[in-house]
Image (cartoon, rainbow, N blue to C red; front, side):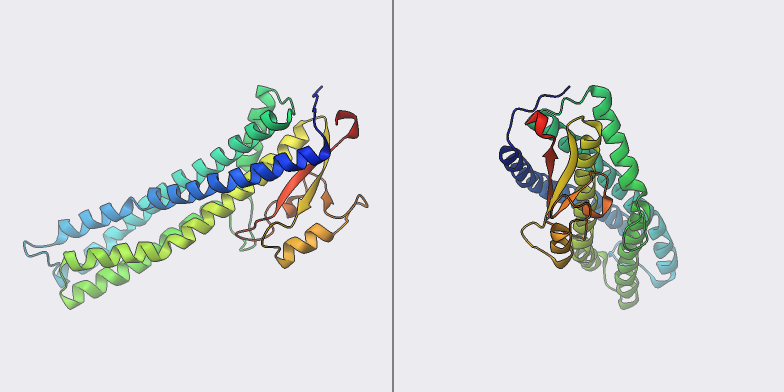
Length: 266
């Protein structure tokens, strides 16, 4: 039986500090995702060099073949995306479960800890977002968009007779213009994993029955509505841990949840 030696106010403060620390973790994760997926820029440069003549020009007759080769670049984008986002989900879940277990003494066993992380990974990877897509669909879509933009730049450069030294900076610009999409996916998937780990850890404990939803710094309309709702007659913003509507109300959400503990363990 877990023994949590803290007051509700102290517990709320612990969660608030955790959210601040999590924000720093996620900013690092976003940079990692951008860097990991950005590995393809070198691959594109190598591809263009392979098709260029000694003057750095790609002849028009080779344009179709170069563009077909972008299929392999798109595949590489997907692979790097899967590595980045799956790693972010795993890290967010483990970081959160460990932080909660250590910070407030839930007393989760090693098997419970592993079960929480397994539940989180399965949920985040398989969940359908508001766009009707699962994570793999988003990765495919993002990879296809970047590939299409690259194809436009390369096709235009070949037609104009530009050398690859002129095209490569434009390819980098295409990627730089798409980084906000990568950051958004990293933010969304990490945050969902973080919230899910909070809830699944609660479900595995014997001391948490309810959680409270807080609107956060941005106080969006969606978050304010959830924070003011009283779906169970327990008070404003009080939900069951497995109420998934509070896990990620909208992209770039700054809301957070705290545990409402059984008074016997306070």
